[in-house]
Length: 253
Image (cartoon, rainbow, N blue to C red):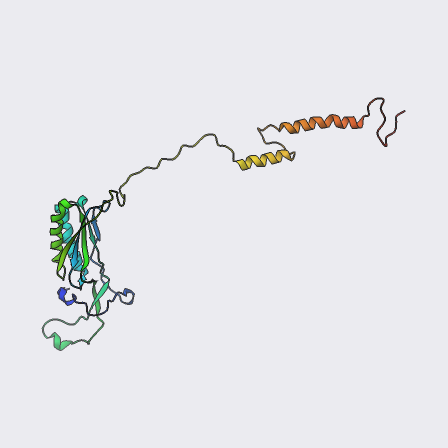
C-alpha cells in the first residue's frame, strides 16, 4: 500500500467522523503507549510541545513523534528521571475513495463524486495552542528534554513551540506499584470465650428448672429453696404431738 503525503489529511474541512459502529475495517491505532518513563514519582519541571495551528495529526505521525522523543529521553536522561505523556488520541476516522492508478487510469475509471470512501486510518483533531506531548523531569535535564521534544515536533504537520513551567512537588509517591508489603495474620488464641448471648440462654434454662449444662454446677439459690421446701411439706402432713388436728381431719383413736 502506497502511503500518501500527510498534507492530504492535514486540513480540517468537514465534521469529525468517529462512529465506528457504522463502518467496518477501521485500521487500529499505531500508538503503542501513551505514558512512558517513571510513572510513580513527581517531577518539578514540565515541558509541553504546543501546536500553533489547528490541524489533523495522523496516528502514524503521533507514533513517529513518540518514538523519536522516547528514544532520546531513554538514551540521554534515563528511564527513572522523566515521565513522558502523549495527550491526544486519534478518534477521527479518515476515509478515501480508492480508484485505479497508473498510466491511463483516468480513462478507465473516473469514480463517483463525493463518494463516502473506505476507512484508511485515524487522526487526532487538535486546536491551535493545544498541548500534544508533555515531559516531566528535573531542572538538570531541562536542555536534553527540550532537544528531544524539538526533534519530535518535526514529525508533526504543524509548526510548534515549547512551553516550560514549574510544578510544586509534595514529596510523596503518586502510585506505589512496586511496593512489596506482606500481610501477617494475627495469632489464633487457644481459649475462646463464650459469647454473652449463649451465657444468657443457659442462665434462663436453669431458672426454669431445666437441667444444667455439662461441666456447670447448679445455682446455690435453687439448692437452698429445695432444702427449705422438704421439712415444710412433712410438717403439714404430720401434726405436732399433743396439738390439734388440721381442719377437716379426724383424730385417730
